[in-house]
Image (cartoon, rainbow, N blue to C red; front, side):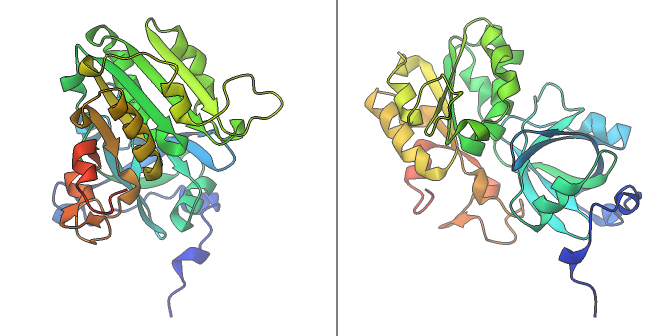
Length: 302
């Protein structure tokens, strides 16, 4: 009887640093091609989230790898399994791939025990993306709740890297308490960029918190926007979409200008496992990025 995969200990450094033989490569299609990638850095964000910086090992493959904001990759930990993770880094700098991973299961738990120099597999990129090119010349409202800042961060980088091509840029971020804020070390950096307005709100403040308290929809009451010249990207728990997008609709923003990510429904990335389907729609093939009009017409999407 084989040993159950969940009893292996990824913390055994010698095992994790061994070269991984992805021997399926010669018979894989393009979308199923697995690229060995080295963990070059691990950044602790909160008690349950870490940011992993990965570099595809083969130089030629690394130079060919490209992605767009809103897409995701499949991360394979040999002996443990594979999970979909949204890309959190800048599309303009694909050499280092940044993935924000919450410890929530066997594979993510294994990754959280991994160290620099460990090798994992990367497939992708998969899925639709935020239409950043169509947003050029317009104002952009970037709204995230909780872990939703991870996929939104790639869009934030895109607007920063092409700042002169956008009008006003506002970032609204809300979470439960200050201890769960992601990427808080970058807030001052983002605020220093000309014409970028970042507002952060928490529901349950601690004694050190001096910022606003409440729900993320409260931040929408504090801003003025031109709904005809603004695009909104919303990432976070699906229940948040209804309240945020309803508030934007009340302000006159067309539903086709609101983009949401259903990245939490991702599974295999290729529409094979049927675990991400909503009716006849496979969110891993047609999504994860949809406009809100489409989402509202997908039964049980949110």
